[in-house]
Length: 336
Image (cartoon, rainbow, N blue to C red; front, side, top):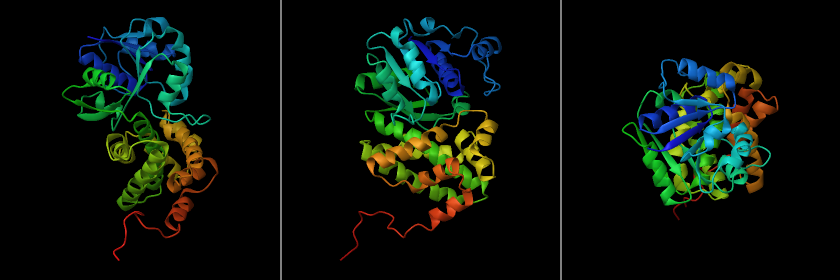
């Protein structure tokens, strides 16, 4: 049995807390929000996961020391915009070599750092890993079969986490490509906004398929330029996560996109979804990375124009369709 603390009381953190508890581990859930901890400890249920009951002996706390000290694993499950402040907050309590697995998805706009890079910068003595893949909290919390991947710097850490999380409904693969895993998980949220916008405009399956296919091309183009492995973008945290996020109504990014396509502003859409829409925060960062690595991201560029420059969604789609003619795959030679 391992002692685990989930940092963050959102739906994904709660789903993983329940999974690990069922796997036989001692689980503590920490949140900086006292109202959130009170809800969880009294109702033993998250309001966004109705019907999913939490065990009476699961520990809920706002106390930093109780959360971190003596734990075999810390799970960083706060929203991406709070990753740095949370890591900085607990830094002095983390022991050398203590394992931290980041499960949120995003890129910091001002530094262009991935979330695991942020955690490593704030807590350099920690052993930092990532967990990602097509995994809606609504389904994981109810034991619906799910497959994800753990990325770590060492095989030993990856296999340790694999053993902790894996069970008959939660299959875990391992990978050394932390960067590729995080980029796939972050950038797919921006493409999912585009997919939702297309849905909101009333477009169909052809459009969705085009956005998914060309979207993964953009993600892999940037990801490989940054040092990620192409195979990662063909896997669970690339095309797998992109498909589920673009197609499912569980996806907050798709739902926000639908509202934007129907004419709401980005702020109105985020308010109505009532959850953090990570793609909004990653969109600007993606364009910063595109500029830094001299990579073209036409879909992500148009999403930024709609979100932040007041461009109409239908005009953005027209501009995408009328771009210069191109080969689909540029490195396939024509026969002589």
